[in-house]
Image (cartoon, rainbow, N blue to C red; front, top):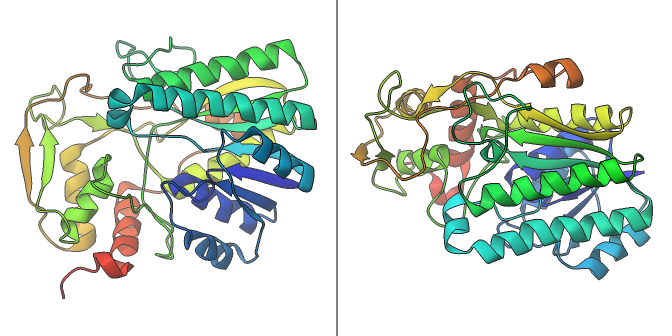
Amino acid sequence: MAILVTGGAGYIGSHTCVELLCAGYDIVLLDNFSNAKADVIHRIEALGGKAFPVYETDILDEPGLTKVFQERDIDAVMHFAGLKAVGDSMRFPLAYYHNNVAGAIALCRVMAKSGCKRMVFSSSATVYCADNPIPYKEDYPTSAANPYGMSKCIVERILQDIAVADGTWAVAILRYFNPIGAHPSGQLGEDPIGIPNNLVPYIAQVAAGRLDYLQIYGDDYNTIDGTGVRDYLHVVDLAIGHLHALEFIGKNKGAHPINLGTGTGYSVLEVLHAFEKACGKTIPYRVASRRSGDLAAYYADPSKAQSLLNWTAQRTLDDMCADMWRYVSSQPHTTPEA
């Protein structure tokens, strides 16, 4: 029996594949490689210690998905595949709803026909309403200020409705906060195509000399230093959380929303200074006005993950930044000046 990992060549998917392989699982990787590089497969194999089948298939390709389930004995699915940039979702809402929602529906349909009814779903903290108090708890109201977050809300509801209608389904809905960092080997990490959408990849590219400075949006929030505060989580801790969720749905039916975060918020400047410590250089930045829709602060209440999954984040902000810098500085196109 194998675990199907959709979007397995992406940032979080690839790290989770490594942890699955190291834990002794067999995996089948599915990705359309629209936002991932094919050479990541060799890195996963090297770090995980064994080869695995790869399908270059789009999540919207229902016949292609059916072929995977016909050819492989799939026990459970970890569903990462989807479009994920908040800004892009504002410009291309139809693409986000089509890919993320219709893709999830196609996958669930094929799973049901194949008798595979266990899923770990990659959701997001963006599903929480902006006016919720912090820390965010799983029973708070959900909504979203952008199509990306709303697509996650819709898929969450679909999965919950499926689990109510058919009690044989078991689903862990993992609401990520802000995954950063890289595999400690330096062989696997986040290397986005084009200008990064997220803070730490942006800082890393400035540190590596690929971008001139970091743009900080707002320094007048009611926070420790005026910059926005977020819950940053090491990607390896996040990947390990998926393994705990996989064990959980092996014993528990229904659909279970669960936060994966540290429960600690760090400001933009705190992250910047931690990265300066990791790379040993000053990172230039400029302050711009606030962006519409940005919140001053949010972070997780991780107690449900602790109680249900027996999982807590282990790695510090310094670990996250050091591992990210090790990866970025080891890449040929991002090697810093001597």
